[in-house]
Image 1 (spheres, rainbow, N blue to C red):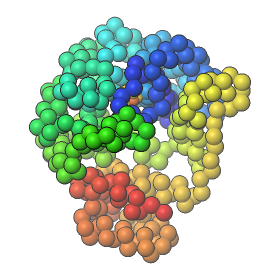
Image 2 (tube, rainbow, N blue to C red; image 1 turned 180 degrees about the horizontal axis):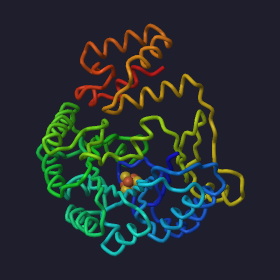
Image 3 (tube, protein in one colour; image 1 turned 180 degrees about the vertical axis):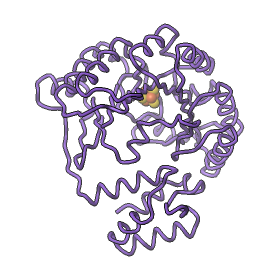
Length: 369
Ligand code: SF4
C-alpha cells in the first residue's frame, strides 16, 4: 500500500491554481501535522510501504522536523519497505542548503521542484514566488545535500509564452541535468483568478501552438535520454516516480489530509476540503473519511484508463474482454481510435501513441462508460 499526504499550505496562491491550498495559515501547520499523525494512527494503513508522497500545496513549507514526525508515525504504523521512495514537492524559494540536508536526514529521497518557466514575466503572470535563478540555486543545493532523484515541473500553453520561450525553459532546465521532468499544459480552471482574467480578454495561446510545444518537448527530451513513461512524465533510466507509477498500475494507496483521496481494494476514500473541519473531525475521533464503494466493473475500467496513461499501456486480451462486455458502441470507438493512430497495438498491448498523448483527456472521455 502506498501513502499520499496532502500538505495544503502555500506562501501565496498562484493565479491558475485550483488545488486545495491556503495562504497565510502558517499558524495552523502544527495542529494540521498533529491531525495527520492522528489520522495515520487511526487508519487501517498496511505496510511495508513502498512509497510515500508529500504533495500540496507546498510541502516544503513544513519544517523538516514536522516531516520527520509524520514519517516516524508512518513507520511505526506500517513499516517501510526496503528502498522506499519518499517524494516531496518543493517550491524553490522555500528551500536552502541546511534545510535540504535536514530533509534528507529525515528520509526524504526524491524532490519535485515547481520550476514552471524561465522567464520572469511568465512566472509573475502565474503568480509564482520565485525567479529562475532560485531554481538553479535550489537544484544545486539539493544535489549537494545528496538528492540523486530530482524532478522539475514545467508548464506550457501559458499566456504570453511563445514556442521559443518554452524551448528556452526546457533547455535551461535540461542544463541542470535533472533525473525527471513533468510537463503540464496550463488548464484554465473555473473560479481561479486566471479564469477571471481570461473572461476579461487575457489572450491564451492557440491549441496548435500548445500542441507544437508538447511535440517539440517529446522529441527534445527523447534526444536528451529521457523516456516518456506517462502523458506528462519523462525520466532517465530507473528514475520514474515509483509512487505515481504504482497508482497508475492500479495499486492501493491511502490519501491522508484535507482533500486527499485514496483507493484501497474496491473502496475509494476522500476528505472534504475544509482545513479546520478536517482538524476538528480527526481530533474528535469522528473519522475524516468519506467512503464510496466501487463496483468491480468501475474499478476494472479505471485500471484500464490509468494503464492507457502510461507507456506500458494495457494488455490486449484483458482490454478486449472488458470493452466487449461494456458493449459494441465502446468497441467501435476503441477501433476508431486505433485506425486513426491515437492508439497502437504492439507486443500484445494497447498503447496511446505520441499523437494520442496530446489529446489523452479527449480519448479517455470518448472511452468513458
Ligand atoms: S504553489 Fe502549487 S499548490 Fe500552491 S498555489 Fe501555486 S499552484 Fe497552487
